[in-house]
Structure formats: C-alpha cells, structure tokens
Length: 498
Ligand code: NAD
Image 1 (cartoon, rainbow, N blue to C red):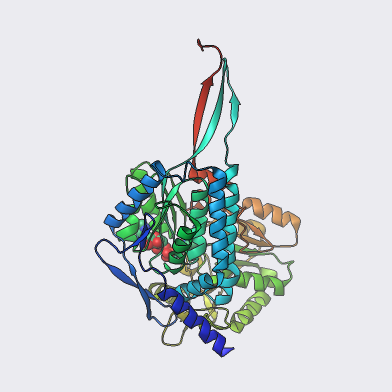
Image 2 (cartoon, rainbow, N blue to C red):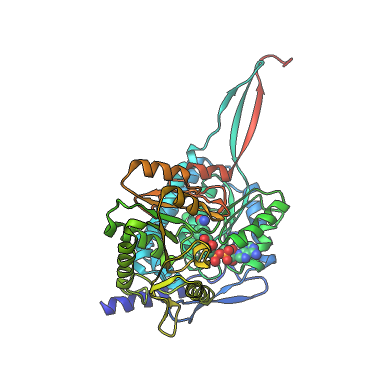
C-alpha cells in the first residue's frame, strides 16, 4: 500500500541519519583528517542523503598503519581459527537481524528495487559471510615426503594487510565478496567503498565492532578513487590488493600494485553473450534473457548484454522480448517496480549516449530509449534488434538497461562471434541439445557459463573474469588462495648430518 511504501522510504532516510558519517579506522569512527566531506546522492531525486567523510592519502596511511599493527601485534591472525570463525558467524547473525535496515539503505543509496535488496543483496551477503566463516578452521596445508631423514609440510598463512576497492552496483555484496575470505584467513583489511554507495558499509562497520572484530582488523574508508583508492593501491604497507570495478581503472590499479610487487586480483567489466538455440521454449528463454540483462537495471558486470538468437526463431524472439520489456514497471524503488533509477548522472549520460549511438549506427530501436520523468536517473527498458558486432552497443560495456539482440545461423559462427570480444566474464547457453551445450560450454572463453539459466550465484562457486575481465577468481574454495601465502617448512628428523 502507499502508506507502507512511504514508510519504507522514510525509514530508510531515518536509518541513514543514524549511521556514523565517518571513516572507520582502528575501531573508531573518525572524520577525514582534513575535514573534507562529500554528498551522497539519492538516485531517485538527486537530493543529498548525507555528507560522508572524504578520505585522503593521510587517512589511507592511518588506516594502513592500523591494519598493520592489528596484523603484527593484534589477536586476529593468531587467535584460534575456530574463534575467528565464530566472530564472523556472529557478524552474519547481526547482519541477519538487521536485514531490513540493510535492504532499506541499499535501495536508498543504489536505487535498486527494495524487493531485490531484500531477496538478493542482503541474504546473499549473509550467506557469503557464513560460507567463509565456515572455512576459517578448515584452511590447512600438506605434508610432503622428501629425501633424507626429514619431512616437509606447508603452512597456509594470511597474506597480511589487504587493500580492497569495490564498485557501487552491489555495495554490500561486493563488500562481502571481498572481506569475508580475507578475514576468514586471518588478514586485516582496508575496504574503500564506492563514492556513490557507502551506506550499507557504514552499518556493516558498526555491526563488525558489535560482533567483536578487533580494532584495526576491518577499516572502512569512504571517498573517491583518485584521492583515496589510488594512495591505498600504491601504499608500501599493503601486502595485497583486490579490486572490483571497471577495466579502465583496473588496469591502473594493477600497475600500482605491480610497482610494489604486490599480488593483485581484479574483477572487471564484461560484454557477456547469451546464446539461444532454435529448439528452446521461446517464452521461457525470453524471460530468462530479459532478467539476464535487466537485473539491477543492467548494472551487472555479468549482464547478458549480447543476446545471440538462432535465425529460425529470431523474429518471434524479438517480438516477445519487446513485449516483456514493455511490461516492466519503472519507478521509485521503494514501490512495487521492476526497475528503479540508474546510479548517477554520469552513468545516466553514458547510457543515453550509447542509446543514441545505437540509432546512429543502424540498430533498430524496438522499445524504450528515453528518460522517464525529469528528476532522478530513470531510463526506459530499451531493446535494440539488428545489432551487429562492430557497433558500439555491440562491443562496449553499456552497464545499463539496453538489450542488444543479434541473429546467428550456425554454431561455428556464434562461437566465433561470442568470443570476438576483449572481455571474458560470463556467458549463457540456452538449448535442449546436449551436444550443442557441451560444445558451446567448452568453446566459450569466459569465467562462467550458465546453461539454461542466468545470473545464478552461489558462495561456493568461483567467479572471475578471463581476458580483460580480470585476473584471479573470487568466491568458493578458490578465493582462499588470494588471501593466504604458502610457507614451505623442511624439518630434519633424527640424523643431524642431513
Ligand atoms: P570504477 O572502476 O569507476 O570504480 C570502482 C572503484 O574504484 C570505486 O570504489 C572507485 O572509487 C575506485 N577508483 C576509481 N578510480 C580509482 C583510482 N584511480 N585508483 C583506485 N581506485 C579508484 O567502476 P564503477 O563504475 O564503480 O563500477 C562499474 C564497473 O565495475 C563495471 O565495469 C563492472 O563491470 C565492474 N564490476 C565488475 C564485477 C566483477 O566481479 N567482475 C562486479 C561488479 C562490477
């Protein structure tokens, strides 16, 4: 009802007001050293929600020193792994008991529908944390037989001080993908959140203190990329860098880490293909391809932003995809809608420019393409057909609600075209032919293949980009390697001459 919708938005604002608008350094909330703040903008109406502290190199230095001390002197890496796991389980429980607050803040900050924040962002984040809390006491090395009266074994030790930088599209979930494995392995963390979306991280910081995570173990910085992110990546006191964001910034982050010889994982952009065979249930796949692109307003790194459809069903698919897009409700994300506003003016302008370029370059705009309303960053769900591989909308990551429909005739052709991209993050295959599925699964050069589904995420399954979509993987057992270092120990047995 209208009154409960109004209540949700008002509750979200009230919750935001009660957050600490500061930096979390060494277990205390502090202002930026130079007192600088910056406005956090509500994407529904472009109003300021609150002013957050704007971290600079001086604050980065303080946070790195706090994390260093917490690592070298503090209890976190040395405490029993079980106890560390228990602390993280406690944080997960606290997050769960604050689920509604977290969902309200995420919607206020990011503009995603409250129903999505409630059903996806928050529960997936809690689940992710529990998954890694469970790993804390299951991280171990190997014993290795060697020549001579000796044996050898490996220790998987924490890397140390970890710098983590995240984007705005899934603020809480991206924070959790980063901090959960790092903390479970016994590292200390400096998390630099996206300047657009700090709110859930501020509540997370409060809950982390309440859960008993010791001072300096989790430091949270709000602020901008060049002022806060860059000094963090290039700080000599950081032992490992982990970044999620655009390929453009990722390249730069990778260089800064490399200059200090620090390991660096990068989760970057994508232009993921969805391939639709001629034998599918068209109505069903139209819906799955729709959500594969329009979920989170297309602001997903893994968005299925090139939909290749077999020529035999292309016309019918296009017609139905347009009908589905036209049925979507766009509006205030605290109301019953499918899509809310895009994140900010920059993203809005970028998306509108791509839509204009699609028309100029000869794609057929089937529906959408316009701004909705005069305030906030609302864009109609947009569908282009007749998109060809060399158009900007067919090549670049748009990161918005723009579906690109393309026609193919043969498997060989679609394999070549699907792989004809600098990106390699994800892909989807829809087919009822097991041979087609097996062939495509192996031929696609990307980190994830979804077969007859899309956008499925489980904490236990690795996720990472190939090619320009990144280096390394997050999630699952694989991510433990990002946050541990292997130490080889040779131990002499009884013979002193060995
Ligand atoms: P972005 O690269 O602009 O910003 C990401 C983060 O980097 C922000 O916190 C920002 O402040 C920081 N940053 C910016 N300049 C920096 C600099 N010079 N030094 C250090 N840090 C800097 O990306 P965005 O617009 O926030 O996010 C969208 C991008 O993220 C898309 O390309 C999307 O595909 C990608 N993404 C990838 C994944 C994945 O897992 N592969 C997940 C989500 C988003």
